[in-house]
Length: 270
Length: 207
Image (cartoon, each protein chain N blue to C red):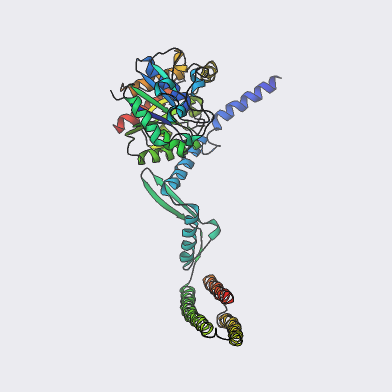
């Protein structure tokens, strides 16, 4: 078996890479796939918090690299999904603790046994980023409809394009506020896609539930009533190759029209 | 109280109809347009310094023929999708007359000629100095036998130094006399020469 290695990256910090990693990983596992989440943000680890696994971590990615434990020993099983596990980052070290070759070796090893290896990338374009993308063949670029996030995403897309091993990269637009788009106060998803000219894999609406779910240590995909949760489940389905229409986020008229526009845009492109 | 409610309602209705017209470009369009521009620059790998250099050279060429407002000149990359265009926006004050253009051209040519002469002078000077240097070192080598003669040789080299500084002064002064309009490049080249002569004197002192 050869699993898929997908890196979740963004360039800019704080746009929702870790939240996206946790939710896509959980959603894929809920669908029955065997999933490993790898936190490569060494020194600033947070994926364990979002999954509520912070108290269960014994060994980290750095321990595996420095051969203080076996790879299997460092994988922490999720509380709810037995087919989801986490390889945490070390908190007391820095990005230089793991090289690109070392991470690639680990992902290659994991590919043999798991369907999906989701790599949570640190912010920035330096060595941490280069390490995180080393083993990946696919990438999801997370951005928000803000200028700084879009600019950084453009830079990341340029770097991903230059890397031969990355066969496909897709855009996930996070924290969309339909009401602000309607009032012409914020860029729409269509605007962002147009500027970056990159295929879309998901639109996640701004949702205060994300904060609550992080506080509880439970990814929002576990809450079936939340808008963001549903949107992430749709992303996971699209990763699996399903054709899922982009969600009609509950907003008066204008937004439905705008989603239709986005859809039309992609149909036209195909 | 009633009046208050009425007036605020009136203001709301008014703003409903006027909004969008008064604001001009929306924040959304603003963001989109600014981003497109900045990404164009990011992707083109043209940095600010290069753009500035290009700007200066363009100004120099254009102002030969047209008097322009260099302060208000606007040079930007713009584009639509894949195509990138270089947009140059120059407020024109007035076109120059033929006589003016000819005059400017004549001045330019003179400056060029002067530059070439300078370069030639510098070259011959450098050669002279090198010869001087060679002579000195050979003299010193020869006169290592007796102490007196070594002293003589040192005196010699002192003379040479003073000669040289006189020379470099001479070389600068006629420059200023002949052409009242020294352009920047010439200044720079003469500065460079100063640096060169300094270097030589330094090495001489070490010897």
